[in-house]
Length: 501
Picture (cartoon, rainbow, N blue to C red):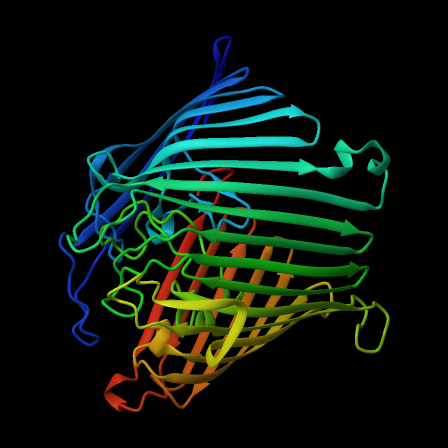
């Protein structure tokens, strides 16, 4: 909705998600309290010229099942005011921010997962000259919600500078080689300490550099980061209150031309997790940096829900590659419309570390070299997707996934062991008349570990541009225990009208 006046414009939206719960004794799903959960969000945004301001009114009555603890009640969860012109942008109040890949600093919201680590303070962006962008911020993390926003105790400060070399050097302005460099510094201040035997640093800094180079069909990016000693509680293991520095790096190389593209990526991370608190915190609470996974975020049901890859926060080395190829139209394999093939593979390993027996001394815990790899494989994910249009009415997507992962590390399965699994997907859409389509989806998962084999089927009918209806079933037919071969069925009905859903 929006209302225009001489005094500016007001826009906004309302989102409500409600769930009513029934007890399921078969799978031992206990009833939440209350049995009706509701999350709602109302945004109001005011704009006039270079000025904007907004609020988000949130309600958790009670919070949806599966949400992290710390969401309760009704009140303001986000508010800001901002001024922007061609050179300067200033925001006070709540904001989201990211430097580079996010390894040093990323604040973001993923509402469906209950994640929101918005910052509360001030940030500014200044462009003093063409090709130079300076950014700075100071703020506190959003930690939880209890009839209003409640922030954490720690203070986060950050500065980022980015320079476009081609804009700064006249002789390179028209060069086919495009270069940019950037650097970041982020620090936290927190004087909380619940362990008397150690001196914890109140200020912890982290810094990094980035490079981006483009030449014709090639693109190369590199990011290197280091975090100073930041001893924090883990799980009373070898990572508990260690004073070792953190290291992180991400390298990418891509080549693309018409109908073909290839990319390789390498990521290294050791002891780069850090929070704006020195005290124990929930898994997703008060995270300053974001450790991105190279693994593809799968959308098909069995791959997405049963065996998603979870980044190892202690450290990992990941190597990945992507190949995209379009078989030309008119060829024997391409057919009338062409055929698209996507190959993707990622392998994740433990960093090679030398552990130190220095608990009574410097407490470095371990040493590690950049991109040194242990023989220990955390996981691999190799997959291929083929997309083909058969005629004007029928098109299909066919996929195959091969997984191996050590769930004693990932902890996403029911039985924590080394798991080997294959998944096949067939997704067919039939547009049988204008504005009417049926989509059929079949999936199978085969494994001798965990809960055994699974099957998935879905039928979806859509009537453009407003209605869609879908039914699906996820069936654990291969469970070793015949009494646990459950069906997980779901039905959806949706109506869409413009911006309303």
